[in-house]
Image 1 (cartoon, one colour):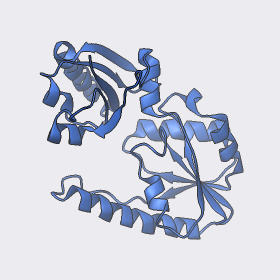
Image 2 (cartoon, rainbow, N blue to C red; image 1 turned 135 degrees about the horizontal axis):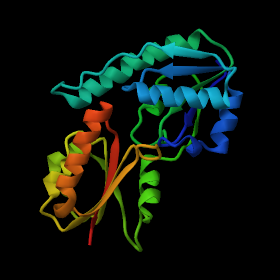
Image 3 (tube, one colour; image 1 turned 30 degrees about the horizontal axis):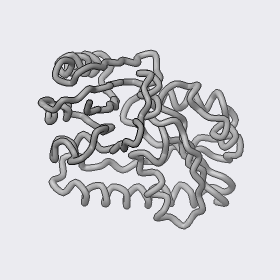
Image 4 (tube, rainbow, N blue to C red; image 1 turned 90 degrees about the vertical axis):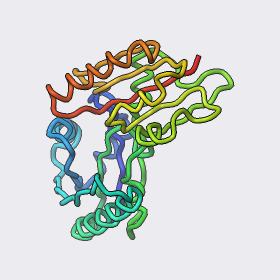
Length: 239
């Protein structure tokens, strides 16, 4: 294969896909499709392919599953990525020309596609996309950064384990399956929360963390019950 394109396709809105991403899709001779956790995401991705690359063959890559309950989290992720690399290499070796992987949001923000491809003997290029962080700030009509300030992007797992990062005033939290904001609920923080960003299911809640945490809990539970899954992102801001 001559080249692999890692194409960011945005946070969920079909209009998030950039002109650069559309051009990259037009160059692809084959699109490698990875199983997603939900049928909704798979359907949305397939709709983008039908819209922008209807004649391009799509090859489904058999994705290994990660042991999410492993005690050694880092070791489990490393083993999973190695297994993915083997599966991807086999798929890439079976095709010629230009291949493409489609990545929700931006490939540089909490996604492993770049790290896996870096292990393979194939040249690749990254086409950035609109991240859920950008979509969150746009939806709430706020700036991510403040004058002379700084922002930390972290995970729910990390926030729950360590609490509020020393010296930080603004923290973006992603991949939070358990409501890690409760770990810092007593801090003087505002929260800007969003789920299903950019889609017709988009939900937004903002306000003092202590005042709206229960409201966010309820929204998350309702969404999980109704849709079977949830993907949310939030900004915690110290006043």
